[in-house]
Image 1 (cartoon, helix red, strand yellow):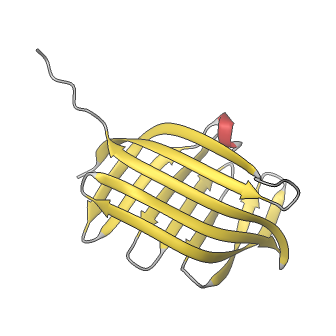
Image 2 (cartoon, helix red, strand yellow):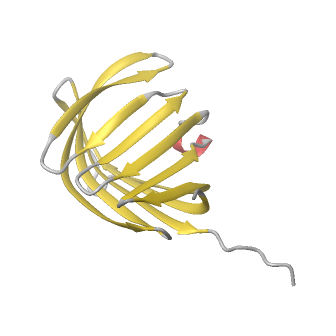
Length: 147
C-alpha cells in the first residue's frame, strides 16, 4: 500500500577544491511502499536541487539501489557496492555519460520507512568529478484524526 511520507535528503559533494566540500539538505513529501524486502519512494524535485520539473524514484533492494529521474533530467543510476556503472544522463543541454563508482551502501527499510546512505565517486568520461555521500530518510507522515 502506498503511504504519504516525509523525505529528508542530504547530498554531500567534494570535488577536492574545498576541505569539506558542500552539503545540500532537502525536505519534501512523497510516496512510499515496501514489499518483499524492497522499499520504493517517489518525490518531486524542487528549485533547491536544481532539478525542478523532475520526478525522482528510488528503489532500495538488498544488493543495490536504483535511482530513476524523469522530467527535466532523465537518467537511471544503479548503485552496487564495489561496482562502477555508467549511464546516459539527459539534460536540457544534451546527453552526458556519467560514471558512478559505489564505495559503500548502508540501508534499512521496512513498511514504516527507513534510511539509506550511499558513498560513491562520480566521473565524466573516466575523469574524476566528485566524492559523494547521499543520504535519504523516509518517515511515515502522522495521520490526522478528527477529535
